[in-house]
Amino acid sequence: MLAILIQLPPAFDWVPDHRLYLSHLLDALVGLPVAVEFRHRSWADERVFKGFKDRRVTLVTVDVPDLGYLFPSLDVVTNPDLIYIRFHGRNTRGWRSGNMQKQFDYDYSPAELEHWSSSTIPKMAATARTGAIFFNNHVRVQAPRNAQILVAQLENRGFSMKPSGQ
Image 1 (tube, rainbow, N blue to C red):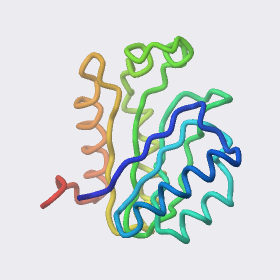
Image 2 (cartoon, rainbow, N blue to C red; image 1 turned 90 degrees about the vertical axis):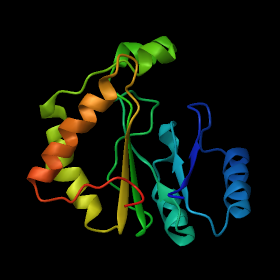
Image 3 (spheres, rainbow, N blue to C red; image 1 turned 90 degrees about the horizontal axis):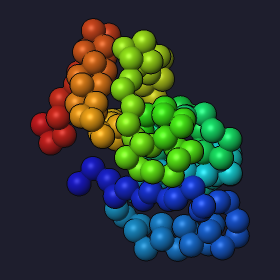
């Protein structure tokens, strides 16, 4: 198993009750590989990153629209065993609509992925043993196409790309 993914909704902000809930959840999963994906910006805090490092919990890196309430795209590695990146698309209007079909309806351009393949991913990969990249922009089958583009870009930079379990 690569990791248990804990996805938290945008309403799950950094307040005492939510921090306690997450702490209890992580305590219950001690010994298992865990990755946490925040949607609320308030979790982008050094204290959260330090706590994850202490617990060896992976902070999920996301690519989403730059909206004031969403967790930002960061290149913070909190677990030397795993980096975990999720591409949700940058459909600002879709995210504001609240309609999941519209949220994830996005086709990345090669130029948008170039930043990730030339900078963010190599930087993060240099500090972790393995990594996982997921495309969640799947509404009109954009995810496989975008994944192929990113893989080609990374392979052109000398990255070894192999499916999980190989």
